[in-house]
Image (cartoon, rainbow, N blue to C red; front, side, top):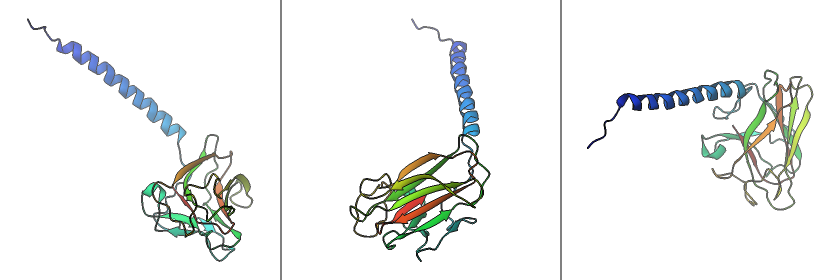
Length: 196
């Protein structure tokens, strides 16, 4: 004997779960739209970004690389050639953007290898609340063999990262931040790449 199948009962079950998924998706969409606004976004695929500025203290400023991109997605990134800079620093400034409110983060991908032990290139990340007239240090990241920048180990040739030699770094931005500066400080080590 076959059991009778109640189509209305099945429909009700399906519509309950369907409604729950729609409700959950709506909450997630509202949460995401309120929490993840972007002040500035750059993937360097269009070359050097309009409105950004760079120094030329050493004769080798930050430059677009067409040989590496964050996690292998795309073609371009921006890099500082520590391999050829004996000493000194080069700054890369974003354009000025709307002041950050509470809950905003600087999120970017980076890749770096050191030349050999003892070559401690650094990335100093600075923020400004006055459109770049003054900067305050947010964080100073070391390269070398075991520094937080090192994703590629040791490389005696100019470093070009592959797709698996990237990491994503995230730092809270102070309220009022309206410009970020990447200050590459060379110890004659090896190349540092930034993307996204």
